[in-house]
Structures are given as structure tokens and as C-alpha cells.
Length: 238
Image 1 (cartoon, rainbow, N blue to C red):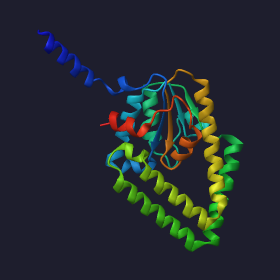
Image 2 (tube, rainbow, N blue to C red; image 1 turned 180 degrees about the horizontal axis):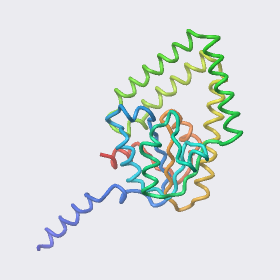
Image 3 (tube, rainbow, N blue to C red; image 1 turned 135 degrees about the horizontal axis):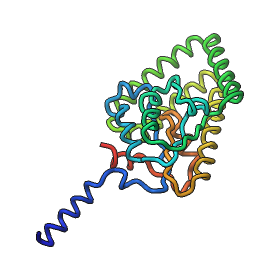
Image 4 (tube, rainbow, N blue to C red; image 1 turned 30 degrees about the vertical axis):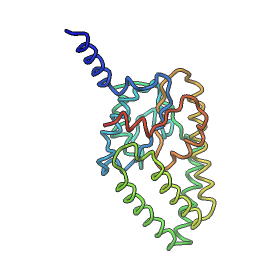
């Protein structure tokens, strides 16, 4: 075999390297799941999410679940990606799981207050509540029309549309909606910060939602190990 041919084969082998070969050994990967939309979005299906987990192959996972859900691998209402992808994947690839949601009394207090706020909004402003439900459906349709790749769920267009919905809700329902969401997101971001600090040199996957991805980006700003997910996904996930 000639030296030129050997070099060509070596280069080809390099370009064909598996996705995990391009993954940082100590990176923090904040991945936005699209929850129930995975089931109807061919550009970001459950299989795509599974491929992302395979590509990152995390040493530690930080999940948007309660401690008891993580411990018992429970179904997670509103987040079907867990029973469909995450729990089966972890069964095959055991890794430490850190739950970012509160549990027990704290969870009950925070969700109880939010639930009461939504109930009051529906009763006091039924037209506004109906509009918000319609807007949510329209935005989901617009996002799915925009998404052509998992990276698109991490881009500026998605962030802007999600923010527009939040601003509309705050305008119609009052600033309390925005404040309570910020408190909830702040709790999860702080748990994520703690997990990152506790696992130096590890590959950490943080599974957030496309709806609160901006909170994680802002809260983790300056984290040296943070991977820029949009370009990484475009390069890695086919």
C-alpha cells in the first residue's frame, strides 16, 4: 500500500469517527427536550433524543424531575420523553442521576401556588385564558413548522417564540405568572450549578425543556465547560 493511499484512508477514518469522539470529556451539555412534541415532530423525535444521549454518553445526568421520580423511574406527567427514552436509556447505561426539581413539601407548595394562580386566571379572565390556550397551540404549530433538526429547538427563533408566549401570559395574567416561573427555573438552575461544581472533569448532560432553556443559558453563563449546543447538534446528530 502506498504512503499516499495510507494517508487517505487514515483521513477518511478520522472523518468517519463516531459522534462521541467529538464530545468533550468534561463538557456540560444542556439539551432541550420538546416533551409531548417529540411524538409528532419527525425532525426531533424520541429517536433523535436517544441519539443525543448516545453521542454525549454522560457520566452524570441532571434531570427535570422530582427526587422520587428519579429514584423510582416514574412516569412524568407532561414529559413523555422520560418513560419513552430517558428511563430505558439509563437502564442500559447506568449513571448518577441528579433531580433538579424540588421534592416533598417544597414541590407541593410551589406547584400548589402555581395551580391556584392558573385556576383563578381561568375563572376571573376566561377570555384571556382561552386566548392563551389558543396561542400555545399556534406557537407549537409555528415551532414545528420551523424545526428541521434537533438543533433548531436550541436556536434564536425558538427562544424568541417561547419568550413571546411568556410575555403574553404575564401581560394577560399578571406579573405573578412571570415571577413564579422565574422562581421555579431559578431553583432548577441552582441545583444544576451544584451538580456541575460537584463533578469536575465529568461529562454532564442537563436535560431541560425548550420552554426554560433560556433560564439555563442565563444561569450558567460563564461556566467554562458549557458546550454551545446548537452547532454541536448540527455537527453531531444526523
